[in-house]
Length: 106
Image 1 (spheres, helix red, strand yellow):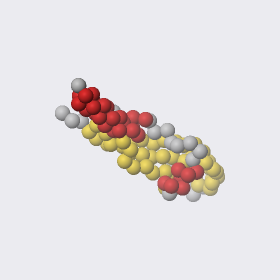
Image 2 (cartoon, rainbow, N blue to C red):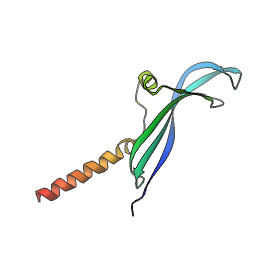
Image 3 (cartoon, rainbow, N blue to C red):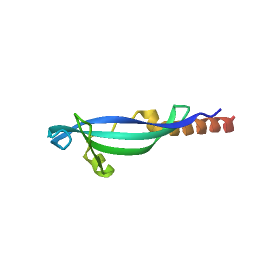
Image 4 (cartoon, rainbow, N blue to C red):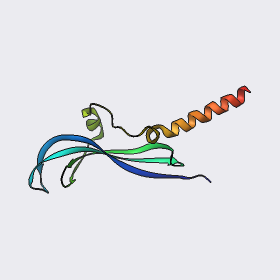
């Protein structure tokens, strides 16, 4: 039986700036947030299918979506999406190729 599916997660990337929040009616710190979706086999071999960056109020979590390219350019380090969620399917393909080459050489 092949088990596959998709899920998502949210990463808080830290406080970016303070702005006036229309919902809170106060000056509040705003955090950059990465919301991503991933698809995978057997909950291990995954790959990211969608990324969205948001600027969200620290208190009420309201905000707006940011342009992906501009948001990634403003980051000092890339977001820390877990390795197997990001490159898990490539690991499966690499293992399959290694097994195929070993089988062909024998």
